[in-house]
Image 1 (tube, rainbow, N blue to C red):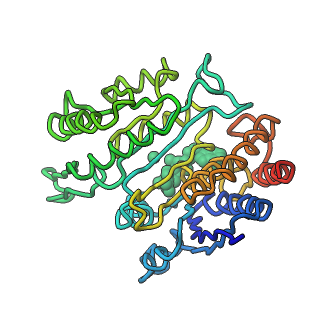
Image 2: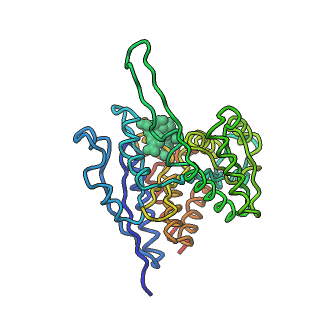
Image 3: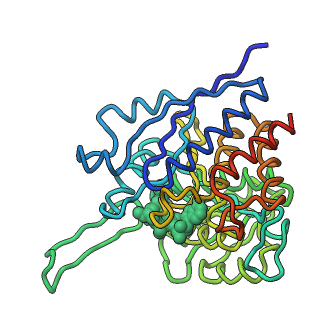
Amino acid sequence: ATQRVHSIATLGADGIGPEVVDAGVQVLRKLANLDGTFKLEFKDYDWSSETYKKTGKYIPDGGLEELKKHDAILFGAVGAPDVPDHISLWGLRLAICQPFQQYANVRPTKIFRGTESPLRKAEHGDLDWVIVRENSEGEYAGQGGRSHRGLPWEVATEVAIFTRHAVERLIRFAFELAQKRERRSLTVVTKSNAQRNGMVMWDEIAAEVAKDFPDVKWDKMLVDAMTCRMVLDPRSLDVIVATNLHADILSDLAAALAGSIGIAPTSNLDPTRQNPSMFEPIHGSAFDITGKGVANPVATFWTAAEMLIWLGEEEAAKKMMDCVEAVTERGIRTRDLGGSAGTKEVTNAVCAELEKAY
Ligand code: NAI
Ligand code: MG
């Protein structure tokens, strides 16, 4: 039989990024070796805030063309204490997401077996969401400017851009995703009472697209009320679609409600598949725990599983997630999940579990 080969670019970048990406690669290599029906080839790029401080650039000339040769990108986190966050974010992460038109940012959340939600009554199975975030424009389009810098009459604008093209393709993507899930339910989040232009257009487009998905149950929420519903009635939600800014905030809340930011993955997808998609844990570079060997690698494992699904390796991805959950269930957990294990221990435990599974 011919082996499927997937070429992966790895970009650990800053802080705990390289630590968790290394853990992810270790588990992926183990999985591919045991499975044998597909092969993974990795190429590491050491672009980081260090590169920026030395050369003035996060991505060297020709870097994007280089990345484009791969089937997918596994990303860690970018951000350093001595580089302003807007420089690092725009310099590396958005510099890949935007030109590669990774317009759908998909963020699943659930409560792992053997872990606890801070919500008193929520257990494994009670919170199982996918947040779909607009990832190409909106509040993060970079439109705006500053005049009269530093003077008392300084003015700054931050203009949100909503195009029918981008909103339609994203909402359609969210409906398609909802259609594939068991509960077939979609919640469209806006703030169309106060923001009466772009957000009202979102609502209108949602209603139009919904006509093509009669089998998906959908409703609308204002973003502020949505935070209450996520806390008070998590079972009522399934797929959630929202703007770049709103979904950014809601997905951090979602990760915290599920137990820890250390387990949550995110996929930056180009659904047209013209460019490689990029997969990353949602957490940042976590300076406070960098180099201590305690970073939770589970978010990166789930991220790696989502990447495998995108590459067509669903069966292997499912096996991997089962093994990760078996490990959390057995109590081998990092500190953020109330355990005492380090990154290495959790990673080795997942590898051992994979050996048993195959
Ligand atoms: P952060 O996610 O790095 O850390 C928040 C808290 O969660 C910290 O207490 C940290 O120790 C903990 N934490 C995060 N990941 C963890 C893991 N895997 N295991 C255990 N604990 C974990 O967010 P923060 O502190 O706001 O940002 C730090 C830097 O990361 C900033 O420069 C920020 O811009 C950047 N950042 C980058 C992101 C990206 O590359 N996509 C996303 C979020 C932040
Ligand atoms: Mg965020």
